[in-house]
Length: 82
Image 1: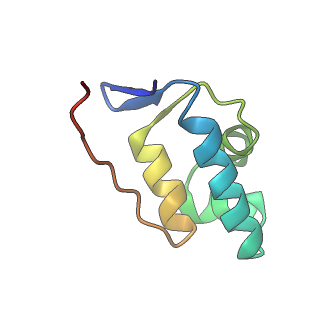
Image 2: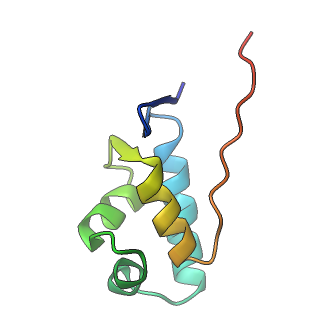
């Protein structure tokens, strides 16, 4: 299960899926990794690792910047765990 720790998102279940979603969105918009990097201020290497599922942790701020560069708004909802 993914968890948020001091502003970072970690876990095997969340980041790979989000990375794939970001990659699909980027390709749909016909943007290169460099385009998203310039718009977000995040290195293209970090974006590439996220898209390929090779990023093991990432700050919420970084994810929000990438999302915004792709015309998306990152929303985080808290739900009780039973």
